[in-house]
Length: 260
Length: 310
View 1: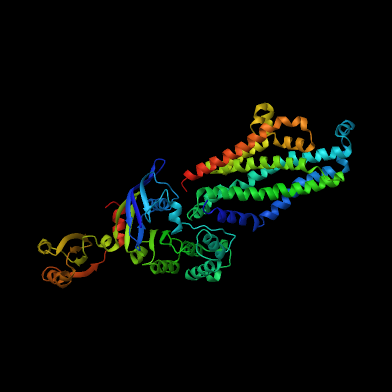
View 2: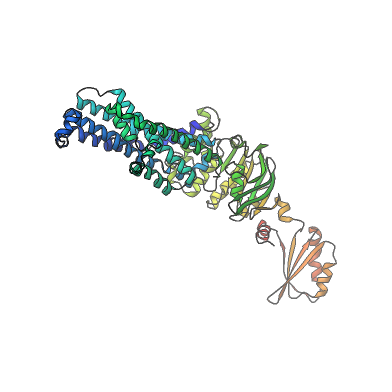
């Protein structure tokens, strides 16, 4: 893997030595945790719940916790998926166009290193800024609202599902960038999946088993501890992981053959 | 140093490079000429392993350009046609980033090398400024500094002086000259004067095919020898016939121009021509010589002949 460490260093500079990390850490924390904070701490929202809803949840605290978790995992995962697509859609196409890709590959660098450096550094930055940081804040808010620590293992399972969902969109955007070299096509296909997937899935439910479209719901359910209803989403979890691997392998294969 | 054999690249229906066989000896400075779209950049990219040949083969340092491209790039310095950098980083940071790809030495060695290169290309005073504020010429110089970071055995430059003003161009030519004897330089350009000044050999690519290659004096001179241009009031057949009789005159062309006649006389022996040619013409009582010049062959003449298909 000649050149991998230097290429990762170069990618990390773009994330961590510019304002990009600061903008993203603030943006995603406010976007995800801000909504969650409203649901957890603003009494007006809890007061809008019906008696039946409160009884089903097991009280007002349990109710706001459940809607808080839905905001974090269902809204949050969809938002992060879209964020990943937008943040990384230019990663390959931009460097194909501005010549940086050719410049880097004119050095003693393995082509696989170029692809993997982008995957590794983007995945790392996105995990820290879009997943770990907002999730930590969310966990602390949940624990504060409950006046005790929220079950950590359940919460981490949800974060794990969130990470797999995010990885799917990261690798999808990467493979589309390498195959099409076209921003419009990347955004159209990836955003169609992120935004319209659950609608398509509701028409053809079998697709939920082979796509990540059900993962936000699955994460929310797993974290709530509703073990009985979790069986339906695990096919989706496995298939999303498989798709991510397929996308990485396809990207490496195609990039190796490309003329620059 | 560089050997290609019938190397060819096709993009869709377009044959960008057609069966080019080229040999570049070690330590030569080869000017790679051709009009825009001739296939120069594609050929260079094939040498660098950035574009895969459709057919044919090539080696650099005896290493295969397809299978061993990483090993080749280890020993090559390359400057692309429009050099790009990480714009938010300074000139020094860009050089140090690229230095990490090579085994140059410890941090101190790398920094010393970086500083000496910045000085060599005249950018030491801008070393700590972000590249985004650099002019085209400054970027070109930085590109040359970066191409030299690994003390390459082979330097490949794609249009290195295209974006430079005359002073910048002169600096680049100076750098190329300074590498003579230590580094093989392969550079593409369309500035013919530059090639004539620094190259020891030339290859001309036209429509993807190699039109000619060889030492610059052979390409310029060919087998023609020098040409003398003699403008006279009129040239009678008798004079032309008498010129044709000399064994050291290889050819005579006549061009009528505004009641004057221009004789272009190609000679084999320059010394005899300088001594006898004008004297012989002046012997003709009916001829008045208005101008007498020795014409120097320029690379441009050869280039234009090839490009225009003459």
